[in-house]
Image (cartoon, rainbow, N blue to C red; front, side, top):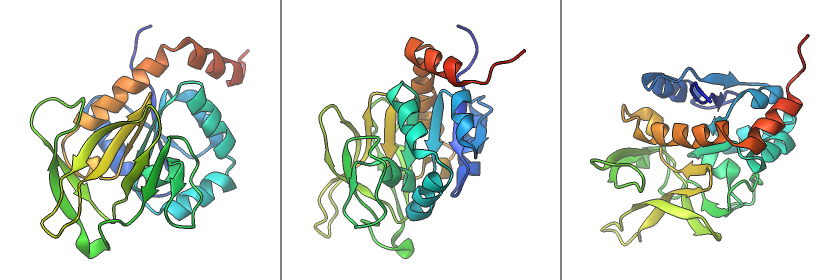
Length: 219
């Protein structure tokens, strides 16, 4: 099968334009996803940073939840960044919103503090070759616990104030979650890693079969 994987960025709320820009830098013409039917047209979906409560409400409002879960179960690649990580987690330390349980992680949001506590860190990320990656943390969540098969890709080292090291990027299968904002740098390596996951989905027979069945027929 020739061609490039088809990547969508959820465009209901948040910084979806920045992800689309980053994908463009590596030759991917991404699609803004606003309707649930568009999930049939992509091999991978990014849920961007923004307001997690708002994103969850909008996903329910526009009937995305069941279809999104079915697409992920059939092999579609998925990446949640910052608020997107919260959206796709198994559970959240806060009582609201209720995440979608698309990756087996427990998450605590705003772990590092408020907007004024934003910071940057150099992270070594499993699967990313070369120099450490500059990561931008803005009201960022952290991964508190992981289930079976979830691989930790990056950790923020312990701080001088006594804050212990924290997991900030994880992956299970084709589902990726990161608590920082790679779309706010010019480093495209993590986006390239996600494109590789979507490329796997593009050639997955189960994924192809499901997308073909649900795409509207043409005459």
